[in-house]
Length: 74
Image 1 (cartoon, rainbow, N blue to C red):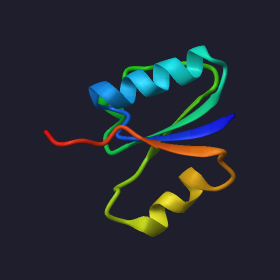
Image 2 (image 1 turned 45 degrees about the horizontal axis):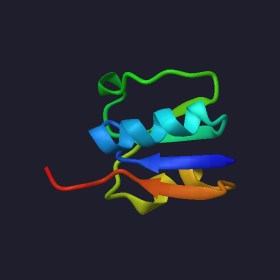
Image 3 (image 1 turned 90 degrees about the vertical axis):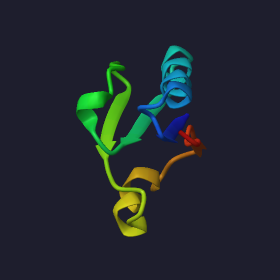
Image 4 (image 1 turned 180 degrees about the vertical axis):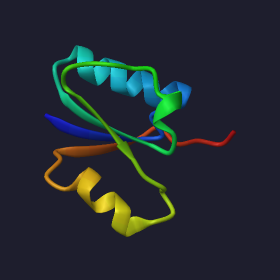
């Protein structure tokens, strides 16, 4: 499957990305700061975007089978 994960730099988001990659999925991790994202993988695309700009997010979700959220309160 082709998946997009929002909040990928947080604890929950990183775990979602890791599990999805381990399961063989193609993953797009949406992050504000790519330098804070430490997960790597052949099937991983890191997409830098601000969640406050819906238009900037369109390419991250286009053609995906599912969009998952790791967003949460700090």
